[in-house]
Length: 311
View 1 (cartoon, helix red, strand yellow):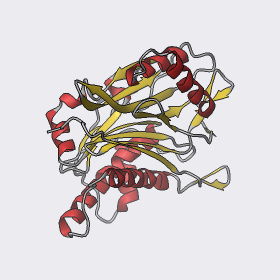
View 2: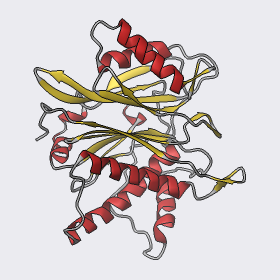
View 3: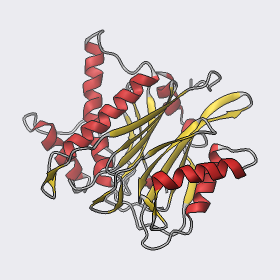
């Protein structure tokens, strides 16, 4: 199930990536591209080598970043309920009764009739009223049960739920991944949607145990979880690799430029990277109209005063 998501640790020294491709394809730090080819040609070549077809019709991407400053939830507009069908609607939701938020990609209509921007607030209210002691993990399980079984037609749907939980008077981040897709094809695309949804916690019980990730976060970097349609998801990884090299050169060349030093900085950089991906893939036209309105929705959660140390 690890192939269902891509993760990367950014803005702190060496770039670490797990693109989440079925054949474990890794985007290497350097490629033998022609210097005169330009960024767009380089990126197309990189995607072609990964076996990915670049589409310009519908894009959707969600990202959750964990840093020592706090958490950032981001989503690109163009959430779809079916291929080639764009659904405008809210994609980032704050859990009002918990120090957490959630982002959604994939099918936007529940039970074939209710859009998620109406269904999720109702689900949040019902969970808060019925749970004896609401928790982030408890809400993730609740969503899994509410969404299962999914009726026809089946649509892929993936949800990030991330926030802070308190354990022994210390707050630490968690990241739950709810989805009805368990497999990834060799080219990085998702497998078929299932009727049942599944949930797993991916940061505190897994990635936090990696000392490289902890050290990168302690040094001011961020660990990012990325999901969405493969063309956009893998394009983000490829484009960010190039941008990361540019950032490092700028930060080392001038005292006027620096890596993110606050939660606001991190949110701005993450939104910039996402907009760059959208701008690159959205330069074409669809149905005779320019692809405009591809905005980035961002919500930030500051780290609590008693947050865990990452070093």
